[in-house]
Image 1: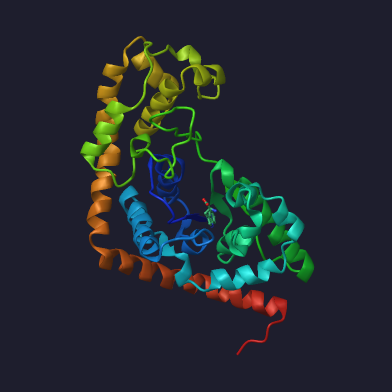
Image 2: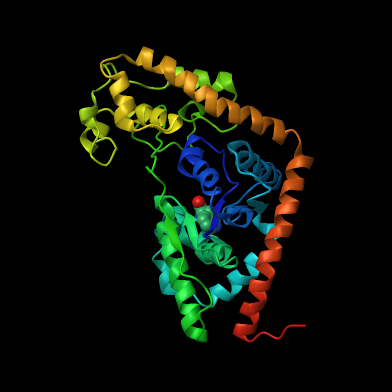
Length: 342
Ligand code: TRP
């Protein structure tokens, strides 16, 4: 059995991109794997977070996991800071990973921006904590998006170096899980930009907390173009839109891609259905589909966010089960490293 670990940061609104790109896959993976899903609050504070908002968002991501269909009885759902072993193993990894490795991380460069001297040291060692998240459970497979692949490579390097340095076969070498058809979800206002929680326009994204009315309105108002919908020849052998079509008609490509993802259908088949139709017809159907899926999830999330005691009890239970797995592994690491224990 594979042991799956993944995490989502409670640092922004969850939106359709998080759902289609990550959380929905977490739900599917539960069927034949041992799954651990974390709300990585310790990663979130590598950039400043308002404490009240951090609490709220930690509950929101938890509610998002639950509303999307992650079962807290079969999978483990918890927040990182409740399981001390993550930070404890991360310290050991701070001493295993080389500075040269961290210097190559492109996400640090992006997030630190021009003012690298002012970035938190947490942001710099963030990938070591991520490696600890996974390896403290001896996780074997990690569903991640494109932007996390480099961090996963580093996780493999850390596991290998630890095993070599101490002459053990202790940590597994994790494999990334590439998700079915990687769904690139773009902004509803500008099909050439990624959908993002930091976009100033709320109309650019469908938030996982949006209710049916908000979802319907955003689909109706999504930017389109003045041409009719294309025929399936613009879909390549890989099941994705050809790059030249994406470039020429980014909004059409985005909306059709989202429709196919939400209905779990082949892109070519969906494009075939709408061939030669106008956006008005398409949007009518898309509204129905989006309300049926995302509106449903939004309503469920709202119900849970309004009941923080319930959400907190799920996290408490998950943390207890996570600690039961992580603590013995950390204890072995401490022995291997040469720490005296009580
Ligand atoms: N770094 C990931 C992100 O920003 C979140 C994350 C933290 C994670 N720890 C992880 C993802 C472990 C997978 C496995 O999206």
